[in-house]
Image 1: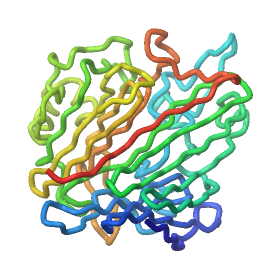
Image 2 (image 1 turned 60 degrees about the vertical axis):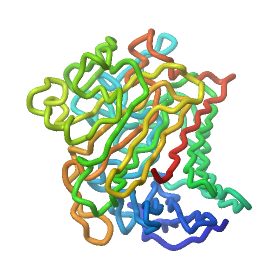
Image 3 (image 1 turned 180 degrees about the vertical axis):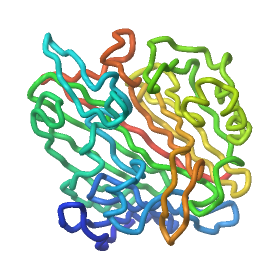
Image 4 (image 1 turned 135 degrees about the horizontal axis):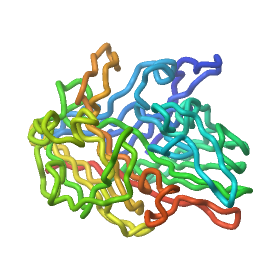
Length: 351
């Protein structure tokens, strides 16, 4: 296997950004930036052997800063939403950025998705690795504790893209890292995701209220039109957007699916394209996955392609949103004596 590099412009402070491309023995490859841990490309074959880029993205680093929709990015310190942009921990109240109405989303205005990470490429015989490291200081956008983060992206000869997250803190804090890649297995330049099929291996969905903040209640997937308990055409679910209250509020699907079994590796979702035969299986030790059908997309992407609502779908593995306010949710509190560790793999194959 091999790793190549190329310049990818500069980030918002004028610092140079590098793209690292991990290529396996079959010629499939994944490209990642040291800026925001952004996945820029995932090129895998279809059933006829033709390669195609199944990951939405941009042609230069600066495009990932403004109006990017967190495209392909590494999200932290806490992915998803925190109600009221505030939380209490060990008797102290911490105030965060209000960047989603009165709530905090994806770590705030200057989250990990717009930081320059220290990169270390490691070539291997059967798997390549890109190690990204970041130090997030105590008080970073309101979060307590100096957090030292290491994220390992791997790509192997079985076309499995692994993302391994590790972090330690010197003060009790909260953390919920994820990746916000937008997938379209027909190709990033395909019209939309409606013809693809999704199955989620979970029993419940998080009920949400105003601002898409969880109420704490978990709804059986059999009771919702967006259950995906069996392979389901995304377009068939999206037809319910105007009639289903939760989907109407979100403009489509934007929901946390509760699989449970925290810290235990499992298959949590499968995305399939009948058109191309490409299949992506999501394996994770996280208890939840956020399915977001990209209704907020409206950007010009790679090669001048115009992305629009439902051009891509996100499958963000996570602990449940706003867990700090719901003690019965799997906790995302990290203490100094602990190590935060989680791994998610996106495994690409042909059916």
